[in-house]
Amino acid sequence: MNSKNIANDWEVSIRFLFISILVLGFMYPLIITLLSQSLGTHLANGSLIYQDKQVIGSSLLAKNEERTDLFLYRPSANQYDTIPSSASNLGPSSMELKKQVEERKKVLISAGIRPEHCQELLYTSGSGLDPHITSECAREQGKVLSFITKIPIETIDGMIDQFVEKSYFGFIGRERVNVTKLNIAWKQFTHE
Image (tube, rainbow, N blue to C red):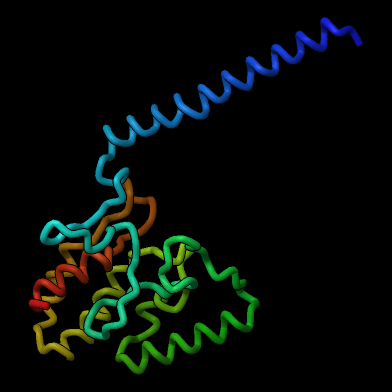
């Protein structure tokens, strides 16, 4: 090989490297950041929820709530930890998954929740951090909370209605309720 060709190849490679670093390392992230900040500031900044100037949660994330007087989130395979967020990776034929579902079913029944109305409470979400449940499941849990707190079911259903999110464009996804937002409102309503 000719030493001139080798030098030329190196020159092209180094130029390509620096152009790639400039475009992919600086320009692309800058453009995406500017677009996200201008088009969706709330989402781009984590959809944080503040109370008394303090962050109390994010509308994009479920939280680990041990209390039984709140609406339940979907189960998490990683205990709602945001760093290694993941699914359980248990398939439909997994005996471990069947065992977990049966255990969750027993817990729901003992809490007075009918599992057939809250099937999402039997399975973990893909990320393990999904804060949404169906409005049917929220209403099923509302009946239990009404019984526990003696707050009329109509009042609880009205509160649930405030947090119902419709499907995107009327056909993508389904009607859902953000449990994080609902629980914050519930705590304020019950003065906790």
